[in-house]
Structure formats: structure tokens, C-alpha cells
Image 1: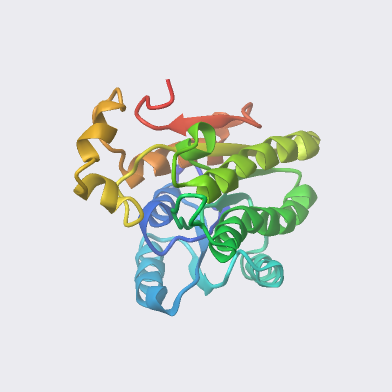
Image 2: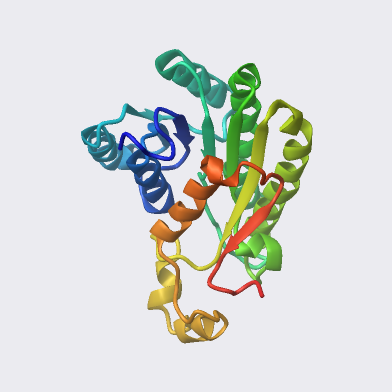
Length: 253
């Protein structure tokens, strides 16, 4: 721990009560980072508390916030409280996301708005707040979670694809804006990863068809997305900004 890649860095991870977010929080903590993470629903309180305790047992500071990153006011309050509690923000992982899949003819305005607000507006909300302490410190790494669907598109996922493609354009623009302040902004585009959100792909009858499209021949694991996040959060990627890393088993070839 004393020689961790992120020793005493402060990291924000949104949507970390389960899945990829949880794996990221654990991975960063393993490398010495103090973790501030969010969850939204009352149903995630128990998991969030368990993760908070697990991270603290690893010898780092950790605190869970029940906060909706899709709300500008809530995001502002959350980041202010993180800075007040931890002193600064060195790393920000915008991971919170949902999907409400439907063909466009059946997709309601409410479904569209929910996905855009949770997946894309949240990235604007949180990033706008964290660049303030990062600019003050003249350093920082922002990592935004897109998706292979944001690059390729997918039938029945127009809202999800639009939100995730938007993250890519946003991140490249932010990288250009804050690079002179030694703040980096990059994107991870996971492929099909085994999580609660994608269980239907693995368990459904179409799983074999998806696997045929993946050169490595398997679904990814949340820990593998966390490994990519660690790379982008650490000084190992100190000369990388404005880039999209597709952690997808070769699906994007």
C-alpha cells in the first residue's frame, strides 16, 4: 500500500454501489487512493455501507454519499462536501449510468430524458465541479465511462448510444480546455461486461451471437474495466488525454 500508484490521492467514483463502479472503487483503493463515491437509490444503501466499510478496512479513507449526479444542485453539493472532507479531488470517475432500451417508435420522451440526464448531464454536472479544485492544484485526471455502443450504435439503444457518444465529444472538448492546467480527461468504452445491467445478454438466447463478434471470445469482467481506469488515473498515463480506450475484447476492431 505504501508504494501504491495512487498513494494518498483523492478519487470520486459515481455510481459505485455495484458492478463496474464498485470494482473501480476497490481497485483505486488497493493502490492507496481515498475514495468518495455515490449511489442513488435507497435500495443501494446496504451495499454502499458494505463497500464503505470494505474500503476503510483496506487502510484508506472512504465515504459514501447518497447523491444524484444527474442533478446539478446535488452534484455541486456533493463535490463541495468531498473537498471539505478530503481536502481536494485528484481523480474523478464519472461512472453512473442507466439504460432504458426500446426501439425509437416505442421510446417515450420520459425514457429518453431519464437516460440523457443520468448518463450525460451527470458527466457535465460533476466535471464542472471537480475542475475547480483540480485547476487550483494544477493537476487531475477525469475518466468518463462511455460504451462501445456510443461508438457503434445498436438497434433499440438510441438513447443509450446518444448519451454515451455525447460523453466522448464532451471529454475531448474538456481535454482541450484544461490540458494547459495539467488536467487530463479520457474516456473508457467498455464492451459487453458481466454486470447486473448486462445479465440478459449472457443469460439470453442471443449470448452466443454476441460472443461470435468478440475476438477474445468472452464477456469482459468489471475488474478489467477497473484496470483500465487505474491506468488512466495514475501517472502511467501522464501523457494521455482526450483519448477513448475501448476495453471490449476486440469488438471495436
